[in-house]
Every structure is written in C-alpha cells, then in structure tokens.
Length: 309
Image 1 (tube, rainbow, N blue to C red):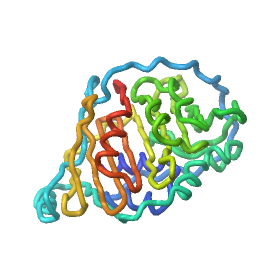
Image 2 (image 1 turned 60 degrees about the vertical axis):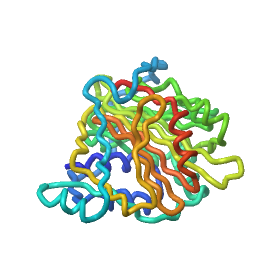
Image 3 (image 1 turned 135 degrees about the vertical axis):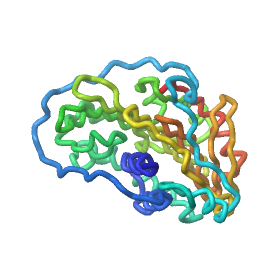
C-alpha cells in the first residue's frame, strides 16, 4: 500500500520518535509485514569495502521509469474527502506540529550511529524491506573523519555504513542512483559534525538493493537548521497516485521546480518546513526549522542533485 514506502524510509533514519509519529500519522492505513525476531549468528562472509564508485550525472527524474510521484495538492479537506471517497486505499499528508525540533535534539538523534559505532545496538535501519534481520557486524574503520563498518543480514546480504564528521567526505560512495554535491552547502552553512551518514545495501551476490544518505546543517548563528536526506530503493516501485495534501492544512504549500529540473513539494507550517521530491524508486527531502521560502528554494537550487535510478 502507498504508506509502506514512507514507513520503510523513516525506519532507516535516526530521528526523534515524535517526528516518526508525525510522518506515520500522514498515512491513512498502516499495514506492514511483521519483522522477524533477530537471531544472533556469525556473518557468513566478510566483504571488503568497495572501491569508490563513479557518480553518473543524469537528472534524478529521468531514465529507467523513475517518474515523479509527489502528493497531489488539493484546496482543502473537503476536496481531499471527495477525491478519496471512491478509493480503496489512499494516504494523507498533514502536519503534526509547527514547532521544529531543537538543533540539539536533532544533533543527538543524528549522531547515534557515530557515537555508538562499535555497538550492535546501533546497527539497525533499512530501506529494503527484504533486508531487516541484521545478525552481526564488523567495524572496518573506527577512527578518523570517516568511520566504516559492515552489517550482515541473515540471508547473506550486507549493509555497508559510513559516518562522517563532514558530509562532503561521503560523496563519491554512491552508486549513482541518486547523488548530490554539498560543496555549496559547506560554503554557506555549518555542517554538524558526526551527524552525516551513508549506507548501501547489497544482496549476497553483491547486487545493489538500496542506499540512504543524510546530512545536517545549521546557520552560523544556529538560529535555523535543516536536515537533508535521500533514499533509493531498487526493489520497490512507489506509486503516489492516491496520496494527497490539503493546502488549508498548512500556512503555505506549493510545488517548486529547481534550476536543474527537479520538482519538490514545499510545505510550511508554523516554523517548520518540509520539502520532498518523490519518484518511483527515490525520495529526496529537506526538513528544517526557521527557514523562509526563498531560503529553501535557494538550498534546493544548490543541492546539485543527480542520479539515474
């Protein structure tokens, strides 16, 4: 069902529980396959860190059937109700709170992996629902500006994770399905050290199944901040046809197409902003506090988003 896409994506991300609840509350239905109980066992193999992969500079909305799947904007709740009345299933997008999480809370949440790199308690998270039972891990790099480790799935899959002091150091690890260039962000905003994370999931034969990347930034005076994320799932084709958002639920809702041709849905409510570009296999998003519309548009224009998945 439509909401499964969103549920899978937020489960992969370290964030405050009330933020997860806000996103899950947007879904009209909540049905998921049960996650099997974890059983500890030795990893079936050790996979070396892959060589840096070349990023393909192809627009993320082009190629391989990866079409735009953003929610449909309707004027108000009545229009949403009318649109959904004849549907068997649908998803509703609405805000939970207009008060952003504090930068301190976001930093604490996003540093969970970095601070607990050697602990198996931090090895969870997935964007591929067939890969959920992580049974063990091997730390490849515990020191330095970029940490690396492998997490093993019971059927032989491998999740290779990286955490960084600076998100720019994670660039070049992507397969090319989705990628960004954060050089401009680093020049104009302060990245939050250790709150930047990337992983890819491969099956036992080394085939790419999915990837996920996050970065956290703040203004120099820390009066505003924003989180950037992208997710790629090759195993699931998302259809946003029956997902709706009512303009009346927000202070401001509109679509914005960046200079590179990527269309984001922007939602402002109170001091919060959400921006997302959803395609068949990819989800790119921004969540921030105390940002104006022109600032958000500038951020998206300078994200240098690329990919071909």
